[in-house]
Image 1: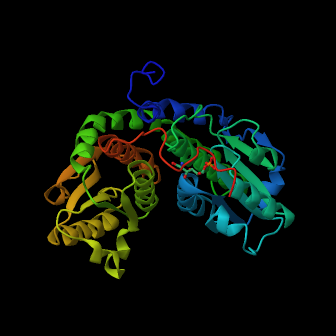
Image 2 (image 1 turned 180 degrees about the vertical axis):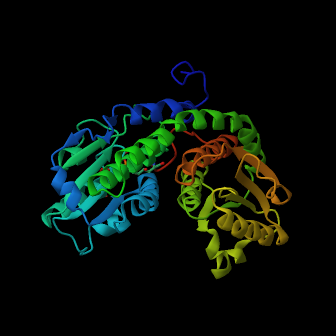
Length: 371
Ligand code: AGP
């Protein structure tokens, strides 16, 4: 009923709007006495300190959150991080050992490929840390440490609030590792945590774009395809935006690293093709911002209809944006927590305008327990 959906036409919109609260719940209780704490910890501090290699394994949206973990963990901890689809990792022969940490990210905690990736890792004595939204699920049960996302149950098949919660949890794991290794001291961890703690409010602010994006979604509903471009942490966001559109609107959608345009994808640009661009911050990432401006200029010259997600006050991008969606200014690594929100709404609204059931897209299950 509409009441269950909080007055919305579909659960997904309710869950999109619950994101600020979900993030508060993910963060709660994980910073105590100047340190990051996990929910379950069956590894010693020394084990954590000795980690010299990280693999992140996951599927779908959880994998996209994992791509972001690499940016944060390598930056904060100076440990090499590889991010891999669980369905690839489990059939490979990755180089693992006691000092390897495998971070398995799964909303349900029951995804068959991710579970098998965990088992594969454990047979080679790697440590496993699970990031999961479901208490007591199989993946956390088979792991050495667990961080629950506490985002609450997610009804929509398309992951929304659990994606933002996974990103947040990944960053908490990064900070825990940084602290254990001594690459970040308590006061720096406290500062990073404070920035994370400010994100629920930033996401709340971003929700003010919902009506603008819904209107845009209705306008784009007849498009043949939509492309998404991002750079740095905006790249996984582009991949996630495209996945949401595929699974909900059954529309051809691709996410690209903007630097790859000239290596192929630019050939796809044709008159009126919608291209969603996630802009890096002009202040925080001036070089990437200017690179992205030239990318937009190029695609616009070839007729693309540009939908630009940019930080408030980004005047330079205005002339190149056929539609401008403004998000609050936040730290670079945290931008995905706000830039993803309009992409979720866009996919849901395009799907609805095309007459599809947003909460139950065809051919998909909420948790993929069979391969
Ligand atoms: C997300 O919108 C998808 N429905 C799907 O990609 C999902 O993220 C994937 O199946 C992984 O699920 P999990 O997090 O429960 O392991």
